[in-house]
Image 1 (tube, rainbow, N blue to C red):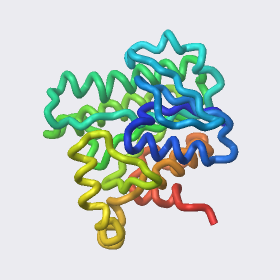
Image 2 (cartoon, helix red, strand yellow; image 1 turned 90 degrees about the horizontal axis):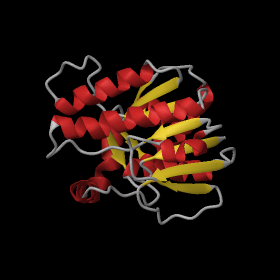
Image 3 (cartoon, rainbow, N blue to C red; image 1 turned 30 degrees about the horizontal axis):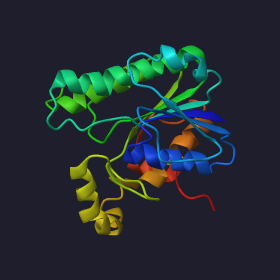
Image 4 (cartoon, rainbow, N blue to C red; image 1 turned 180 degrees about the horizontal axis):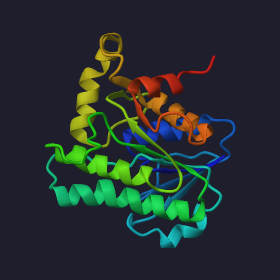
Length: 224
């Protein structure tokens, strides 16, 4: 398989990239980044690109893709709705249109979040924007899966880019075993997320299109 990853420098994207590089039947991984990653691998090719609303400059690289793993995202804290919508909705849809134009049969996976508002009418701004993004992706002419994880435990060296989140994960990481027992429906890991994204690529549109932590953990379980 030939896949493309957006947001590979973030915590979730790092987990997905790691899973892709370990997967035997993934032959090439394209990572769209603003600045080069400190990762080298025979299967990895980095596409340094600045404008996440226009992919004309790299359009030729988007052919013959089997999957797009879209992990790019930001916190809504300190951001108004216009800015948050531009990054969360506009960047995502621009990427979806670009990859589907060149690879119409690909599978598109989007990392949303627990609490996303599919009605687009709720009180929480971030949840409305994510809901709108999900709805528009699901209406596009490709197989699409929306991932709604709750608490995500970083694995295999994945770290959050946002300082507050990095500190939070550092302080609460030891709680993960307890959270997994007490709140199994709300916790997962970057490792499970990565493997689950690869798994839905093989489903070819089958199964539920909106996946929560229990689905992610089931699909992303370590193979025996």
